[in-house]
Length: 69
Image 1 (tube, helix red, strand yellow):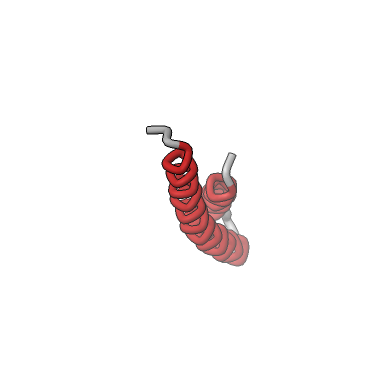
Image 2 (cartoon, rainbow, N blue to C red; image 1 turned 60 degrees about the vertical axis):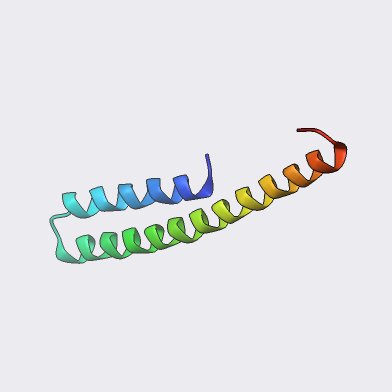
């Protein structure tokens, strides 16, 4: 499981906790946590996408240098 998936899972758990909360302060805390996990997931996804693209370019360069198509 990638970090972005883990962070998204935590955000979903916090969202559910907020929906189930009967106290306003508990709901607010869960919503803040959800927002934080969501932001971390977005940053992580951006990094993962960039890393995947870089690795694909590196593999293509290696294959090209080796004469593999």
